[in-house]
Amino acid sequence: MVMTFSDAGLRRRDLATLGAAVAVLPLAGLVAGQAAAAAPPGGARLRLRPDDGAGRALDVRLGHHRQIAARGAALRTPAQRTDTFALLGVTWAAGSGRVRVRVHSTDGGWGSWRSVPALRDLPDDGTAERRHTRAGTEPLWVGDSDGVQVEVTGSVEDPVLTLIDPGNHSGDDPAGDPRGVAARPQKHRSLRPRIRSRRAWGAKERWATGRPKRVRTVEQIHVHHTATGNEYRRRDVPRILRAIYRYHTKTLGWSDVGYNYFVDRFGRIWAGRRGADGDRDTRGAHTLGFNHSSVGIAVLGSYDEVVPGPQMLAGVAKVAAWKLRKHHRDPLGSIAVTSRGSDRYPKGTVVTLPVIDGHRDTNDTACPGEHLYAALPEIRLRTARRIGRSRR
Image (cartoon, rainbow, N blue to C red; front, side, top):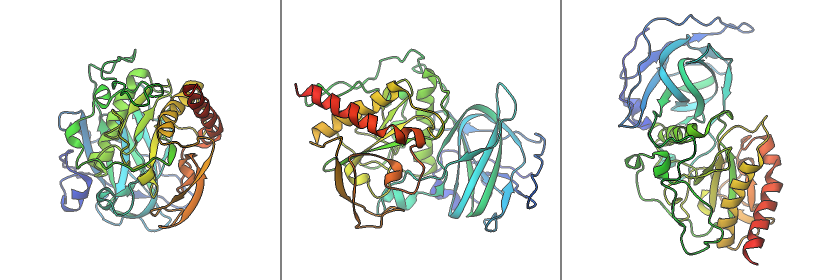
């Protein structure tokens, strides 16, 4: 295996000019109907590099050829030992494909194969963020791991695996240290929930680029899930947010983390994109075609098989009530909105959608998972009740 190492601080749009300046893992084809045995861990360990003072990361080019798979073929890397990482993703320059991974846990053995969802949380067409982004997968939180194996099915060009170790900060308090919680502004004070700031989870502000753009009005709340694991601990949440932020900015080339707010399984609310710390409504990069008039809330976890708890639903409703009351929207109603171009609704299409909807209502995706999507009526009711109580 030929390996050299990348500068993990380089943005993904620079990969085309890197040549051999990234680590390389060879890909082996699978015979139809057979499962190839994974190569035993061996050889040189993939070494992550310091990531601009915020953990470590490594970009790993998969294979030596730009076109790694014929349509319908499956190609798989050897099982490779690595330095410790906790989040991964795969991006590519062009084409389409499906990705599966398995990882070696630092406190166990090799896990089973897992599908990594395709990236559907995207900036709007025509924005600088969209021009600079690569196709690929969502970031997948796997917990502390020291080995990885990747399988790609489909036809993609220049695939790159990114491994991220967000590190540990002194503020990653398992009890939920309130330091860095944004102060309450005077307007809509009765409904503004407690929000843990970007500083609280350790956002490296110099990674955010450009000037945030405000939305003129908020017509909708889009509910997402991050498609990551559900067994995280309280002290893991800041690490997860730092890793997602790194993937969105330095891997995908976005100007900031895509979501306006995060809600964890404990019901805590975290500021996402710049502006969330205060009272600004900033255009995110979460719902392709509909970012211009909405707020995106991402629930940490995967809810295709797991039912979201009441604390989590309450957290989402708190943010929704605050924003919708401010803009005089009915959380139980629907609204006619104009798409700016999504994979489901072409640019200029006027579509009537719930004021509080799920990501799948606007894009071709399973997000926010079957069980969280089924919980949207309860979120709408909780939001309406909260607004109602504030008016008494």
